[in-house]
Image (cartoon, rainbow, N blue to C red; front, side, top):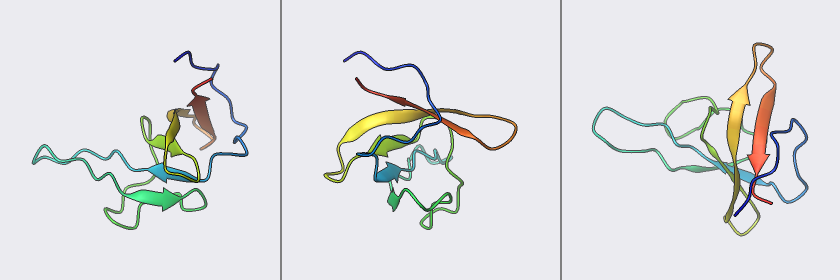
Amino acid sequence: MPKSAPTTTIRDDHKYWKCQQFFINDKTCNERNELSEKQCPACGSKRDVNDEALDVYMRKIGTLFKTDANGTEWWQYNS
């Protein structure tokens, strides 16, 4: 599926995010969080590159592309 250009505008259908924090024991957090939460309550990691954008049905609709020096998040959505 083609991806859109990275954007700082959150899509209307982007409601949740999935933490992709990787741990030493080869495990990934995978906790699903409200978009309003910038830090994962399960593992304590802040939202970061490669975390997944999820819709209301918990389907992946994109990924966090980057966070700039000002803390602005750039999301890349699936078209």
